[in-house]
Length: 591
Image (cartoon, rainbow, N blue to C red; front, side, top):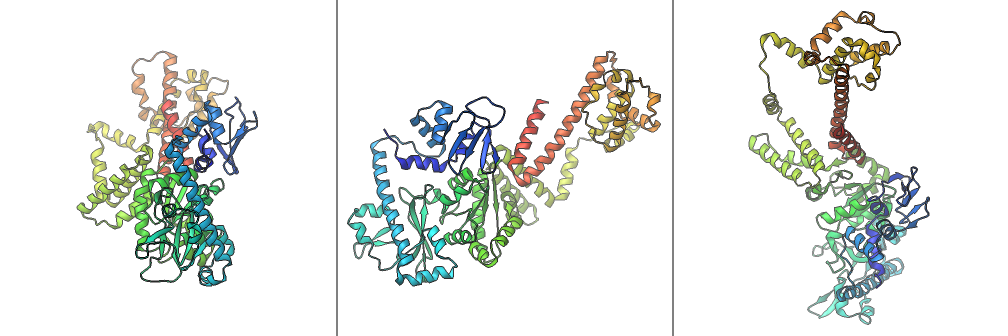
C-alpha cells in the first residue's frame, strides 16, 4: 500500500534532516551545511554532509545519498513503512494505518486543500487585477505594502458582493464548503455566506506551504466589526498548532539560529518588507507548548516581540509563564519590548531594519530575567509580600521539565532574592558556617589559614614535600609536570624550584637558597606535615601523596571553571556554554 504524498511531505516539513541525523551522527555546523563522521564507514576525517535547505544527506566516502526516510532505513535496517512510522512519531503525527478512516480523511483533505488553493488564488488575483478594488489597494499602500510583498504572501481581498461562491456550489457540497470555515450559514436567508467579506485576507499555510486557513482584516473601521478575524478551527487547522509564515521562515533555519515571534500578520509582513524574514506570528491565542516545540525543531533562539502596550505586555507574560517549562539547554527564549504604543510593523517602518535589529540586540531580556523583573515589580518589602514572591518564583522554576535548566533558573531566582534581603542573607550565611571553637593557642593559626584559599594551602604542602624530599623528587621530577599552581607568588617559587630540580646536578636545600621566611611559612601552614608524622618511610608513598595533591589542585581548577561556566550558563543558556559545562562535569566525575 502506498502512503499519500501529502502525509510524507508533512513528515519531511516537520523534521530537519540534521535533527534526524544528529540522533546517530555527531554533527558540526560548517557554513550552510553540517559535517560529521560517516555512519556507513569507519573514518577519522569527516566526509558526511547534511544540507537542511536541500533536504538531503551525502556521504563522500561511500556515495550514500538520500532524505530522512533513506537515512533511517539504512542506519536502522528498517523497511520503508517502519521508517515512516518511526519518523511520524518523532514529528508528533498520528500513524497512517490505511484504515477506512484514514482513506476518508485523505479524501476530505484533498477536497479541503483544493477549495482553499482555489479560493486564495482567486482573491489574490482579484486584488492585483480588479480595478474596482482600489480601496483595498489604497489601504495596503498606506501600510507601505507594494506588489512584491503582496505576491510573496498571496494577500487577497474578498469583496462584500462577491459571487465566487456560486462557482464552488456547482462542484462541492455545502457540507464540504462549511468544513473549510470559509463560509457560514445565514440563518435568516438560509444560504451560505463568505466569512471574510470586505476584508484583506492573509493565507495561513501548513509547513508544506498549502493554505489551510485565513486571517482577515477590515479595511474600513467599524465599531460593530472585529478588526481581525481568523478561520474557525477545522479538521485540518488548529490555532494552537500552527504559526503564520512558518512555512517560509523554517527554510531560513540553516542561515540563522533566531526567530522572531510577533502578534499579527501585519507585523510579519511589515518586517519581511524590511528584509527581516525570520519571523512568525501566533494566531490570536496564547502561546502553546506545541508552537514552542515546533519552533524549537527549526531554531535555537526564540525572540518574542509583542506590541508595546499593556495588552502586549500581558500577552508576553502569559507566553513567558507558559513556555519557560519547555526551556532546553541548547535553546533560548527571550523577550523584546518595544517603546510604548509601537508594534514591530510601525517600529520598523519608522526606523528601518538596522534600527530594529540594533534595538533587538541591546534590549532583549532572557525569559527568566523577564519573569523575575515582573514579579519583583509586584512585590513590597514586607515579609508577607516577599514570601509570596519567593513562592511564586519557586513554583515557576519547578515547572521546568529539564532538570539542569530547573537547577540554574532556581539558583538565579534565589540569588536575586538574596540581593533584595542582604541582612537576612548575612544571618543565613552566619548560621550555615560551622564555627569551630578554637583554643586560644590555635586561634591565631586558624585566622591566618582562614585567610588563605584551599589551593594555596595545598601548594604549601607540595613545597613541604619537595624541600623535605629533595633527592627523591629530583629523581622522579616527572611528578612535577602538569601541577597547577594558582597563587602568583607561589607560581614563581614553584617554577624556580622545578627548574633547579630538573638539572642533572644534585640539589640541596642550601643550594636552593630559599628565603628563610618562606621556609617558615611552608613549615607553619603545610597541613601535610601532620600526615607525614605517621611514619611514612617508603618513597612510593611520598610520590603517591604528591600525586594526590596534584590531582586535588587540578580538580580545584576544574571546580573553578565549572563555577564560572555555571554562572555564565545561568545568564545566557547558550548551547556552547552547556556543552563545555557538560564536558567538564564528565571529567570531574572521572577524576
